[in-house]
Length: 127
Image (cartoon, rainbow, N blue to C red; front, side):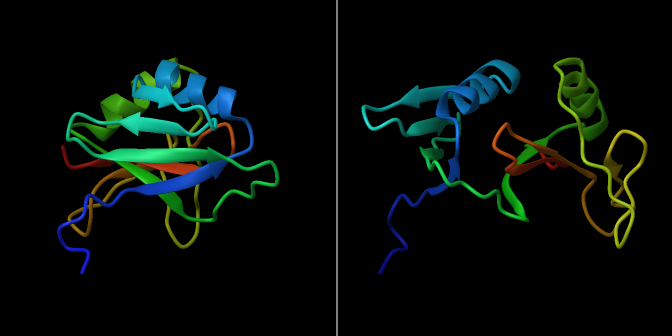
């Protein structure tokens, strides 16, 4: 029924202006905003993700958006320079001092960070 649709995902934020600045300025994503205050993140692949305002927003406890990159360590270094702090995990997964979980052949290298609304995002080896 839906295999030929152009599906997209979305998540909420409690401050759309902060979200717009974060995604456009820090992450350098093309962002548009409609009259209802809904943001659309536009990617070269043609995919889009929406971020909608929700005053009583509660961040998810899981990753809502993943960014495949060619080099996780290099990307993490660049994002740290832009003021982004990476999450540190100890159990059941262990990240290094920069916040990178090494896949060691069992999965991709990956690092997690949060947007201003507390939504969990990741960069992972795979571009």
